[in-house]
Image (cartoon, rainbow, N blue to C red; front, side, top):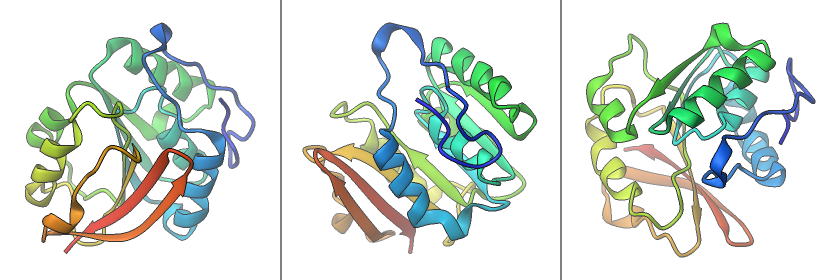
Length: 183
């Protein structure tokens, strides 16, 4: 796994041990960043279920101003910190070892996030509580773009959530990227 472009282009990232993470494939990651390219420069990113930090670090490499990385696994957050050092982007990132929903409920930031990556373990039911809380969370506003990477089988039911509006969706085999905003 490597950084595709930007200041850390070509740098290889470490993966957390144990094989419990699923990094975004280069094809999916590349497509994601092609879609959001106009939003990246000087943007604030939140990488939930961050794993290795692959998505948030790619965003920083492309000119993002700040990224918060959240994962409940200490192994993952240690790896993210190492990857920020490897890519020389540590000064732009902050790593939190905690449950993603708890993070959203307890942390406060002076400015809202511009882009939020949500990449939970597939088919574990972790999206439902997050999607229910997102409209209440002061970290976001109507301009915040949320991107969920999920498996086709993992339905998110945005149509039944009037406060969330899907703006795009892309399918890559069994992987689906769903883009949405707050209404």
